[in-house]
Image 1: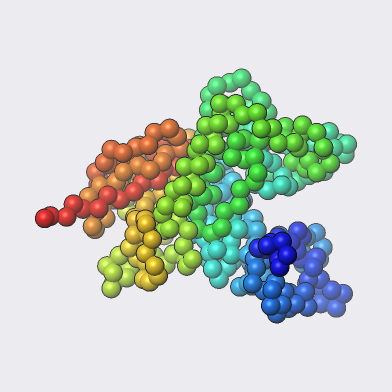
Image 2: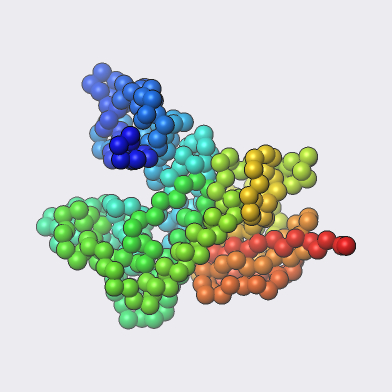
Length: 370
C-alpha cells in the first residue's frame, strides 16, 4: 500500500482466514481485528470471497461494515430471471436495490454475473452443461449448477436466430449489472464475449481455452460499444449508484419518492404481484430529486424508469406520469442496441417492451413558462 499504491485487496476463499480450531468460523478473528486497527490497511478496500468448502464456510452477508463481499445471491437471481426460471421478481428487485437483506450499505455488495470460476458470459448463454473433458477428470470437476441457458443449441451454432438471442441475453445481463445498486464487477473478456468453449473450470488450461482472444469479430465490437454506453449512463446518472438504500417512502418535504416498483399497467406492484412466481415483467422508477443532501452533480436529479421483461413475448408497458415531467425518452433498449431513442414518449402510452429485453428511460422535465 505504501510503496506501490495498492488501494485494496480481494481475499480468495476468505473464510479460511477466520477459521480456528476453538471456534470454527470467527467473525471477530484476530486477522480481521489486525486489519481494522492497522493505520494503513484499515484505510483501503477489503473485498471478501465470503465462502470456502470447510465447516460453516458460507459467510455471505456476515463480514461487517468495513468489508465488501462477492454477492452470489445477485448472481443467482439475475441468472434465474433472464433464463426464465420459476422465481418471480421479488428476489430480482431485492438485488437491483442493493441487497438490503445482506448489507448495511449497497456499496458493500459486489454484484457479479460471472467470475474467473465458472462460465464466462458468452458460455452462460451458449451452454446448458459444463464441458470440462479437457481437464482430465471425466467432466466431474467444476460446478454443475450453472443456472445457464443455451438459447436453443448447445455450443457454437450457425442458427442466426439463436445467435441473435444470445447476443441480446448478453446485453440483458450486462445492463442489469451496470444499472443495479451496489458495486459492479465485470469479468475480463465479458465485454466482448470471450468463450472458454463451455469449460467452467479452466484453471488448468494454459492454451486457447483460457487465453483472451483480442481478435474481435463484429459481434464483439458491437458488444464493446454497448458496454461503453452502459458505463457512460451509470457515470452520468448517480441515481444508478447510490450510497444509501432505496426506501420507497414518500418524502413530504420534497414531494417525491426515491423509488416506485411498477407492474406493466404502470401502477405500483400489489402484494399478490410480488408473490406471483410466474411474474416476469416489472419496472422501477428512480427519482433523483429525492436526494436530501450532498453536492449536486450533473444528472443527480434525473428520474429514470428501468423496465425488464423476461417473457419470450412482448409486453405492453404503460408509461407512468410523474409530477414535474412531461414525457419519457429512451436512453437504451437491449432489443435495439444501436438506437439512441430521442423521440418523446408520452405518459400513458404503451411501450412495447420486447420479449427478453430491458430498457432505461429518462424523464423529460416540464417546460418552464417564461
